Length: 374
Image (tube, rainbow, N blue to C red; front, side, top):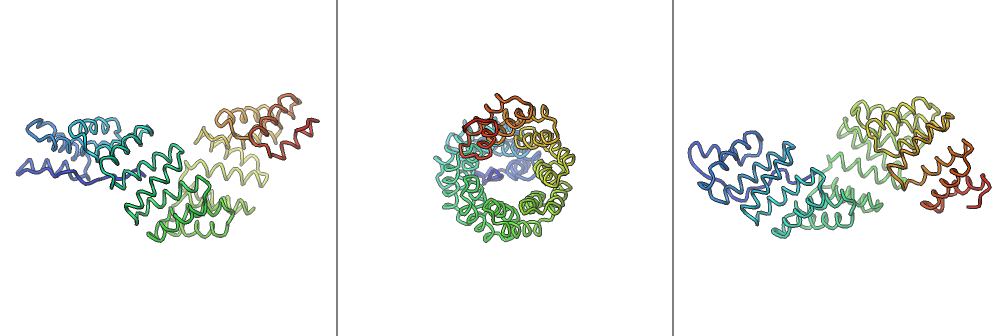
């Protein structure tokens, strides 16, 4: 979540009569179209307005465009605000938000860095830059920025929550749990924090604690599709496949476009031996998220187990094209090539698996079965 959506104005526009209404429209931040209209009226007054007032009007109109999802228009307005006032920290911060929304992470980081240089006490700029670093996968810098934001705003729930995410992505589950726990202490009704703490517990293999957190998240928000899907994963990992499927069904009923719910329900059906249902779910998961290498891999395994080896290889090829470092897919494609009698390609894939994952005993056994020393 990008923050802040609404920030305090650098200065108040003031006037009397009809112009007071236009200025009020430009600063109110609720009715976006009215805000755009009011700010445009101020901007069109040109040099009859002070340079500072015009900068504020461009900034506020940029905010309205940002909220409407018109990111290029927002950026154009922030450009003009900054040109009029090169020390306008809020405009840099908010232009960073527009770049972040567009996925232009380096530009967003540059703007947040400038906003921080102009106002080192701006917790939101640290938070937003942390968000950009996290999306880039630069987790240590993200954590450092979240930590700085927390130092400036020690009771900010969302920053603890997002720092917990970053720790979780680093595999530092205990630190993630500590941050999610702090977020819950600050806001006991924060369903997302329970859900994500449940994920950290699940990744640690503490399934009962994970289950308790998912139950709490669902109690707080009965329409929380991800919490149902995640609780389904706990049931699946515990071998309770019917309960898992029931939770995936509920998640899909709430959010029919939740690709991971289809993917994981496919896994539960596959574990039950219901391969046609598994195939249907993998098909849907791929349709919703064509970049999911694991879904192609799992569908490939279903094809392989059904004896449709060429289809299996095509899916493994697709998974490798998406994620060339996914060792298990090379192993699975190697098995498929071996089934076709293509020993040379099978060996090449098994060797590639061990290049990525040298300790993979299953692949070593597969090589030995072909008479090759790992």
